[in-house]
Image (cartoon, rainbow, N blue to C red):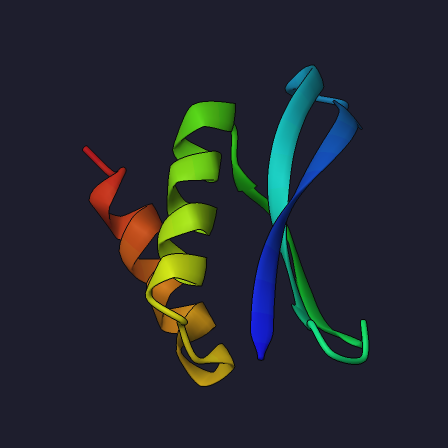
Length: 78
């Protein structure tokens, strides 16, 4: 079974300066094998936690992770 985890990341960008973001790690719960890690998806911890919980509650298939992230990012655009 795929489990999604939130990973806190610290960045130092020439333009943005120091900032914290959150990535998504997808791993197999039975073997602890990490399948994918997507960096720098969220900048808000609460939003990130909500989506990670949703992915796990709905048992999001790994094949749909990229599309889910695209939908999240698209919904954040003004």
